[in-house]
Length: 214
Image (cartoon, rainbow, N blue to C red; front, side, top):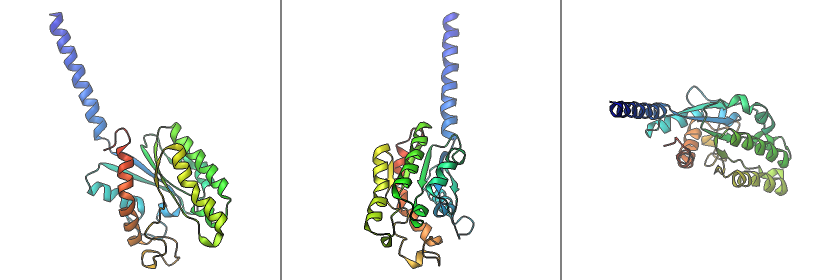
């Protein structure tokens, strides 16, 4: 009788484990897009922003995922560092970290930008949240020294923290008037489509490396 009870108890435990695994898999993979106006969707209509279109593209490929928009127009790396803890909720599995453009436009010394991004990456590592670091490039009119120092921030930090790197968030859009708003800096809806298309392979690889990813 005790043997039968042991078998029954073991079977119940097995079913409970299977149920827990099934429940965990039923939860969508949670991504947060953390950045400035490029992430926030400045000048765009409903469902035209980067996070909305990225989520739609991932779901169209069969991925069960949510992509939350934690972009704030005008944000610098200092502002991002100050709000990181409450802007990235518990349960987030991957953050697309996109900051630095406003630092560059304001002429913030690259070492300050690097220090702020370094601290953010450290905080996310402590929380065991994976990161895709979206790089930015300095405008040539800031001079070669500034440009070289700024552009080097992102590959250096990606190497230090061993996180995925997408070298230039505006790849394929910068310098293309037909893909930008009239301000010549922000993407229009077509520009966002191109950004999503280009970052998608890197993002899918980043998610695949995360426990619980696809």
